[in-house]
Length: 68
Image 1 (cartoon, helix red, strand yellow):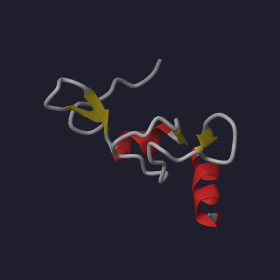
Image 2: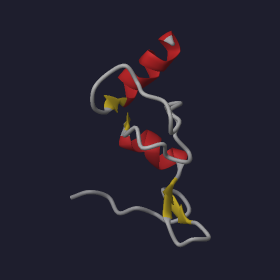
Image 3: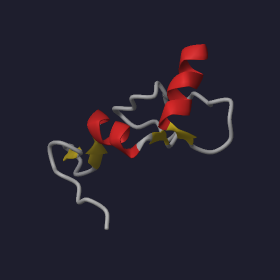
Image 4: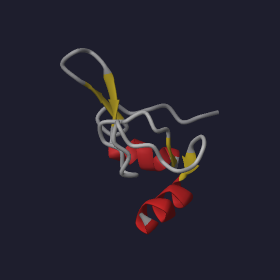
């Protein structure tokens, strides 16, 4: 069974009532979803396209971003 999310640690609710994942949660999840998350620790921004198909596992994403 998956561990439940903790408000304030894994996410917070913004002024519009949307759930926003924190950098802590995104790192714990372990990969970049390429959706332009507000606190993306993998360096992805909305207009970027990583040079691979699909999501990158966390370690591969970090290595890819370091190479440029």
